[in-house]
Length: 599
Image 1: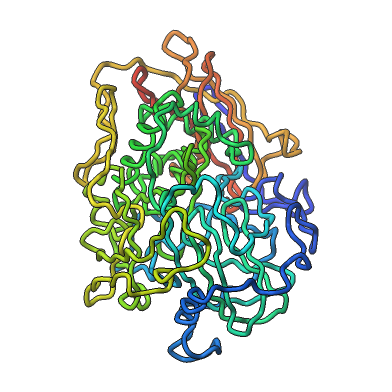
Image 2 (image 1 turned 120 degrees about the vertical axis):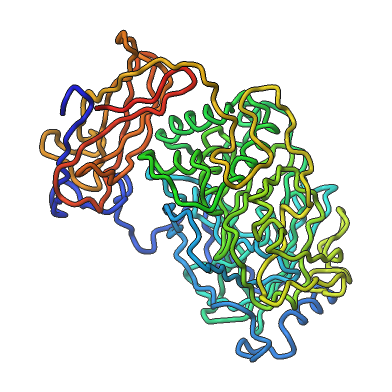
């Protein structure tokens, strides 16, 4: 290591018997041997499942019968439900998702989407949701244990006075007496009104902390499952976010919903929020409006690869598909203490934000402008949320299939809505009825879709508060490089950055001075000072591994303290080749100080 800020690391390939077993991208704290059949806290034993299927009101029975078709067999030809069979999954095996860097759509790309609901919620079928990010930046489920849902249970009290929409799902499900099987949903807040199986088998509905929906059967086997879901209007679009400071909202979040924020995220999010001229004192309305406008303005281009960590690159880079936007917004909101979920399916991803005084609301950020090809989409009425989208709609967003723009169609089914105080029984306009309104044609290429949360056309009220510097633009060309106002041209003071020490992370149990194992944690300490040697507070410091003059891994971002000191605990990739690497540090500067790098 030199005083000029470069340090040489040797990433040794260690045998599994040395120190700890090495796993690509998995930290020491997560290398825990799983024990089969271990109990899951909060999970409900199968024997507590109902022995009989709940009674189904006659009108609901008719809706379910229409969805299932005249034949009861799951292999009934044209009456067979769409998609593949849903398979069981161990309760504790909550899927973790590591975000990729493929931010540009491939040539001639198409996204294929399978709808299972009537009316269609395309492209917002709720597949898998994540409500936490772990210490390695991967999204996962905060609590994978499953709680039972009572079929036909009364609506929550905060739904009172809200209109509700109903949907009938139809699909093939493999049941297991040991594991629950994930099934699609329609919203972050929903309840199960009724269900039926083709063979009369009883099932139990369950949910985890991210609102993922599951079923479990008394007898193993594959059945055709038809189920009726109901959701409130605010689940499909943000309605009247409170005009409180973001910090006040965070303080009122119930204990069980408060985001669990990794230490590394706090420093990185501070950098992102500073660039966007937002903080915890910003009005929650303004913060939400500006963040949505920022991420909706992203472009379909390749990621710049500036050596920063992936979150920072995505949050400030201005490029990315729907999954990249949703990932970056979820992490940003979590750092502010606001519960936010990443939700997606095979074709699209978005976020759900917890709104104080309301509940979980969908926020669509857009994605690639490519064709969306769906199954039998012209045969289903299209759900229309009938709630105006309050957020800015940049031109780049309006051209995307989730926005209802040129690449999408406009459907509608007013008959799916019920009165706020309607009972749990289905009426003549219940889910599954297609006579409440027909979907308009989508075009000969069978591509496109109708937005859920963004169906209202023009913005219902993006913030017009331009009194503070750096207001997010509410429109603009896709060629714009950033969604924030440019910095002023005032001269900036120079900075010096240096790395003081690079050691194996004590928390990982590694001995210093013996090289570094790939997949291990490394503690990096350094300083950012001005020309007089005085420490600079609050500057971002980006770390990266370099070999033969080429960056091979972005390690993350730290923030300097009052004395200019920065410290980061970074993870060396499990895919590094054995050899020597340079550890480089750089700062992008801020409004006061110029960018600089260790030389």
